[in-house]
Length: 183
Image (cartoon, rainbow, N blue to C red; front, side, top):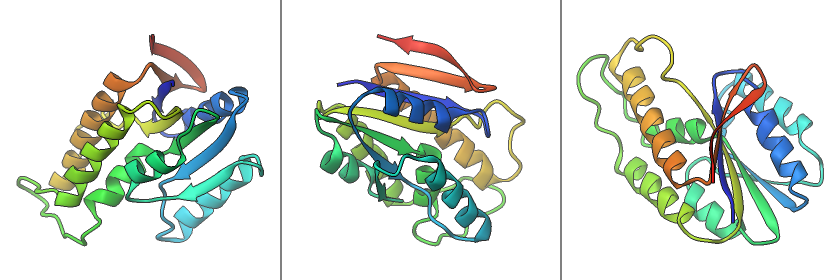
C-alpha cells in the first residue's frame, strides 16, 4: 500500500501530476471527486476535470464522507485518486449552513471534526494505494476575515496530518514535482 499526497497552489499542475501517477500505476483507478457543483463556474470546472480523465476510470462523487468512500473503494488491485482534500474541507466547514462571523473565533461543525478524524483513521489501514490532491493555501498573505483565516489554518493542519501518514509527498510548482517525502 502506498499513500501519496500531491499538493501545490492553484493551477500548479497538481491534479495532472496525480492523474499521471494513477495512470502509471497499471492498476484499476477509482477517482473520488469531492467537488460539488454549487454554481456555473464550479460546474464548468468539474466538466473540465471530467473531460481530462480517461473514460475507463470509475468516478465516485463524494463531497462529505470521504473516509467511508475510501474504505469502500480501496483494494490491492486498484488505486484510488482523491481530488481534492481542500474542496472536501470547505464542504465540511459549510455543511450545516452556518453563517460565520467576520471577526472572532470560528466554531467548526461537529461533522467536520468527525470526518477529519475518520479520514486519518482510514489512511492508517492497509487497504490499497491512494493518491490525494490538496491545495497549499498558506504561502500567501494572511487572509482577511475570520472564516478565511480559519479555512487556511484548517487546510494547513489537514495537509500536515495527511503528509505525516503518507509514504510519499510531492509539492507541485509550475507543473514540476518536488518530492518532500519518499519512504
